[in-house]
Image (cartoon, rainbow, N blue to C red; front, side, top):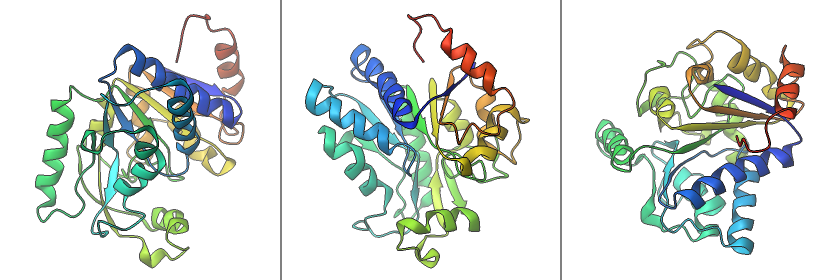
Length: 261
C-alpha cells in the first residue's frame, strides 16, 4: 500500500522522524536505510534534536547507506560515508562500526557490492528506508533503465544527475564522479517500510510518475507502487502534478488517530 501525505515541509520532517523514533523505541536494534542529498536533511536535524533533548538512542541500531561514489578519496567531504557521519551519525553518537556502506574504494567492486548485500542480510534486513527522488525519477542511484529487480552494483551516473549534484562540488560537474555503487531497486524494495520525501515543484513530474504513472524502468521510483508499505511525503510543490491530490489529502485527514505512517 502506498500512502501519500501532502503537508508543509517542516511537518513532513516531523512525520518521518516520528516513524524512525517509533521504530527505534519498539526495536532498539532496528536497521535504518540512510539517504543522502537535500531531501532527508530536515529529518536528520529533527532526529538529532530528539537525541539531544529527548534521549532518542541509536546506540544499538544498524545503519545502511543507499549508495556511495566510486573513487572519491577517503577524506573527501562529499564521500557519502563522510556526509552521513556529518549529517546524522556523529550527531546522535551512532557507533561508526554500526553504520555500513558499499566500499567505493574497493579494488574488487563487485565483491564489495556482494559484501554489502550480505551485511544487510546478516542484520535481518532493513526495517525503514529513507529515500529522496531525483528529477529523473531515480532512487538511490538507480538511473532510468535500471532493472526493477536489481541488487547493489556499480552504475554510471547520467549527465542530469551529475549536473544536479554539481552543487555539492563547487558547481563543477567535472568534479562529480561518473560512477557510483548503489543499492538496487530490488534491494531497496526488500526494506519493510519505505519513506520517501520530496519537496519543490522541480520534483513534481518525478513524483507524478512515482505515484500515478505506470511501473516502469523509465521512472525507477515507480517500483514503490509494488511495495506493501510505502509512504510518500510531499510538500505542495512536489505534489502539484498529482491528479488525485485532493483524494490523498482527504484520505490523510480522515485517518484513524491510532494509525501511524
